[in-house]
Length: 371
Image (cartoon, rainbow, N blue to C red; front, top):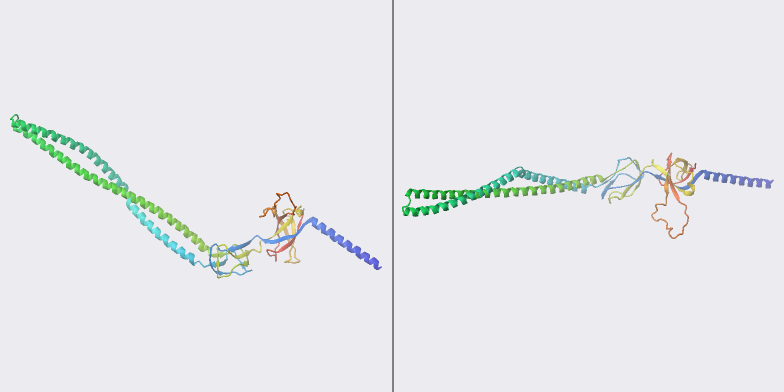
């Protein structure tokens, strides 16, 4: 009797193990099962200041919830605000200098073209009159010379009583008048030279004014460029003053606090790690041998050690187009001809239907249903 009971027990155990084995192999044939899965977050950010400085206040602690746009920390802005004020004063001073130069330029510009035109016309007119007068003077002196010769000839004839006294006096009068006319023309020429000198001075003054106007334009252009550069620097400083305040980019929880206040922080140094507990997903590293029958939309179940006795339902959201090792920084060297086949893994992303009590970084076991 005892022998029969022992045989039945053994047969029962064999049947149980056989059932469990069949069930195991059937389950694994219908599902891709792996422990290489992790709970991750789409929103996990390391927050830092965009400027260096003295951190005077950090307002949040680890595991504390925050809202988007909430102030998290503050760098002392005194150095930046002081530099900003200095730049503002320099810009105002430079603007006043530019306005002064513009007024000087405007005083010279309106009458400049008129002065140049008048001086040029005066120069042309005097040159023409001088040329004509020189011809007149030359002709007048030739007439004086001719009348002088005639006067000497008439004087000799009068001495010999060949002509009347009245005839000599007439030629003498003509000679005197001719000399007076020549002298008058010479005086007029002198006056023209004086006028020509004034016209030259006016032209020189006009050229000087043109040069001054050009120099003023260059100064205005140069100072305007300097002012524009200062305004750009001021705008950059205004941005930097804004960067002394650190705000939360989204709703979440402070996962880690890297520094305490007061402390010196460099630009880009981590201050907080912020995560969004509502943006969790499952990343599965699935063997290529298990990849068959896995498609987007397939259902999956997820278990974690962190939340035992709880099943989370999920759905395949995406499957990577390349293996996880494709973009490795140290690719495999197969140039020698030696090759060992390695099991490649592909990243499968699962969308969770519920995330109660899950946390980013947890390990998970996953079973993905095959078609």
